[in-house]
Image 1 (cartoon, each protein chain N blue to C red):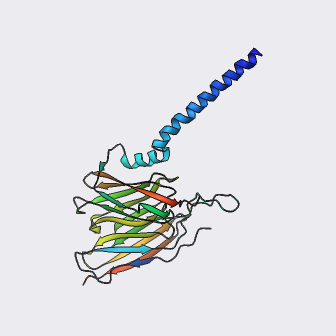
Image 2: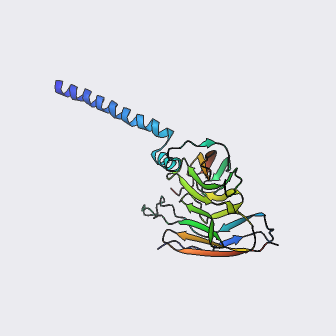
Image 3: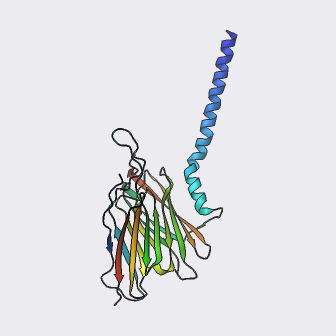
Length: 110
Length: 152
């Protein structure tokens, strides 16, 4: 059985202006099992991690990350994005077992 | 009796040879473990990276290696012509050196990534950044780890 994956939390600035570079901060609950650890019986606990994160803006990839077991549990990922106008960002997290979580956010420059 | 002494001497010779064999590769491994060499070669692909251009922000001392905040910032205009296309992070002292690989685009406006990493012991962390113009930059930071974080 694969480790549970939570609902992602995404934070954008309250207000943004066109031309501004904002920071998008994300957090998701996941144990990020390294595959190095042994359980009480001495058996290796199999690797089970979130292996990829992709952020798309209006359908086009703007940022992506391949994660390794060396990423801490409950992965925190933050990155900048230049606001060129209104748009929709969609983020996808994918685990080793292929399970996915999605989050969307609207860019609404004032 | 004579046979016995000879075999004992042979035994010593074999032992000395084994120690020599064991020490030689260990000295080389201390320079760069095979897994790290392989991970580095995959990113470098025969190229020599230039020093500088990367700010690798990590705490000098991490009390808990399980959760070490890391920022990688690359000096880049992030225009369509000249932007960072990828960042690779390697932990030189972890059992598996690969930490993360990032794909960047000019839409980001700034070449920066933030995450939290695991470090098994005191070690150097390396960041490599590649640009659309073919530049390859390398940055390095040492982190002293009080409690290792590889769940070992």
